[in-house]
Image (cartoon, rainbow, N blue to C red; front, side, top):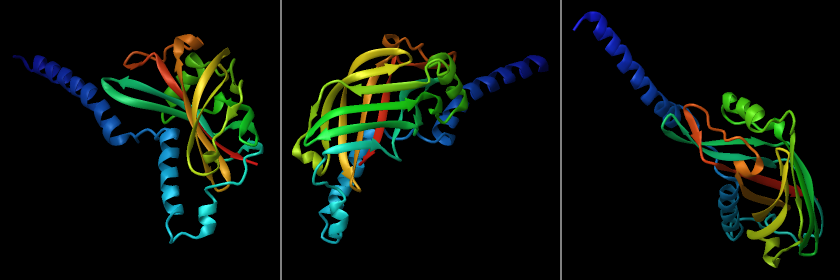
Length: 240
């Protein structure tokens, strides 16, 4: 075998190793794992707070922060609120969870006794960022076309009746509303987990978005494939 052939074979093998091993090293060693979902974060944190509140070594003032006397009033979106997406990708044979988020969220919730009567939220889609600028470029242009559809919005359609336990600890509620995403408006159902933290109401939830139903181009490109759906996820901190 000539030296030239050996060199060519070696080069081909080297490229094959880089294509196979490179993504694995990047994803499993270099890349920071995707953030935990908001629902999981809220549930885990709330359980820890409830445990601390029942600990006799914790001051009563700290325990009181995890409950409120009444929810009546208008609650506005405050600092700490985020909205974003979660999509499962296969990147050159490696499974990756892609997450993009924005903290540019506005809106409010109106509560009368234990009934949520109104809720509206708007997120600036131009500010959603992930851990990869190349993914962000695809998201902003081809996928979500934020130039023509710079915001997404949700409004509650039917009142939600809250259990008394919602004023302390963690509770789960189901609501129906109207979501506008990439210029398409559709009714949606959303399951929301809520808790009380520092006198504020914190809610988290997610909505499954099937791309074709919202006229969203499939994010897949050569070398990267995705499922036909993703999650719209949110965490909203509400203060009076």
